[in-house]
Length: 418
RNA sequence: GGGGAGAUGCCCGAGUGGCUAAAGGGAUCAGACUGUAAAUCUGACGGCGUACGCCUACGGUGGUUCGAAUCCACCUCUCCCCA
Image (cartoon, rainbow, N blue to C red):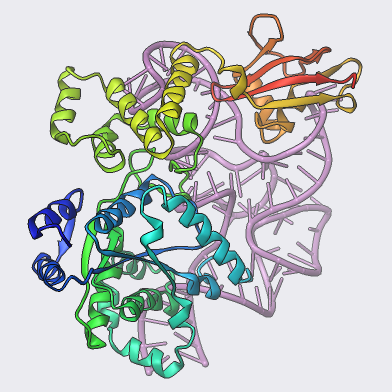
């Protein structure tokens, strides 16, 4: 609260899409400065998906900004939804996850989130604390506070309604439950991505209905995934987890479309601010090589979630494996021990090894990879060469490096005589 | 309560008795080209076997048939119209 209004707004506005409504937010901050009472800044998290990826870090960073300004971060664990289970999934038989699992997942989340926020200064609340005790009468009061028409304003509801895809009544209850969280903790501000705008707005309405001053919303941009099109999410498998191995994190960044460089640099790295337009323009007119810009971005991202040394190592690994098309350094290749019972007639078939390791999910996939020309074998002391025969058998001693594509590599160690 | 339509592989979506492991598209994987980008081209894309092959699969169960994703019955789920 030592920070002036202007300084606070400066930091808060950075990277945000919208402040709803900005005038109210300014009033809240002013009041906070006058009274010395920090604002309660809410963020919701889903205990069913505890792994944090780069997309999540955008809002978390904003939460960190608020913390740095002296405000109170409140993490809401949506454990109540875990108890109900999700009926829209096919496996409605699936048991709702238990309390221990929720706790464990939440802890995983906190461990990862502490790479971005100051976890020790944050407050953690589980929403079952206030949602579980509600009785039907309480639920009626809550549901009376909102209309079907407003509910159908939400884009995906509207679309599904129009297209005739099912919407269960319970799904209407989720935004209301989430809104009630804001009532329960008397949130001043809630953070969320643009996809959360509707849900957060419901929070404002419900708070008013319950006689509270409505929260202000800080809407953050969504981060596109590694495909450059859809938003980053685990289920689309286009994410970069902040616990991904450094070289993997670096590699995934490099595989990202060029168009993302400016945005990612701004939203994910802590690099000094440059005009995104200037960077993009530089790439367009050729004065900045996109690969260099992307390498710098990848480097900074690894550095942020690991360390300088890890970033250097990841960059070297990348240059070696992909630019120079060399094998990764020995100590980074997973090992597989070939024991006696795997060997017949003094050898072992390549497809058998591949299916037993990370190289292929099944023998069929292994065979296809060989037929596609993507499998290479480098005996212990020899040169690497492509395997073209599906039935290829490696003769003892089977020491060497087996590779499928550029990314999947395994080191075989002969243990047959042990 | 009445009437109508529908449920297909990771997703979308063709297919109305054998030639269908199931068109087409998307996603994905490998190869070529490259900057592990984009674009383009090639191939693969349920499991197991070297292969002729076998097994599993078109909501569920049972049936008709030499043979069913395709026909019949019942069940489950969904959408639309009417009340």
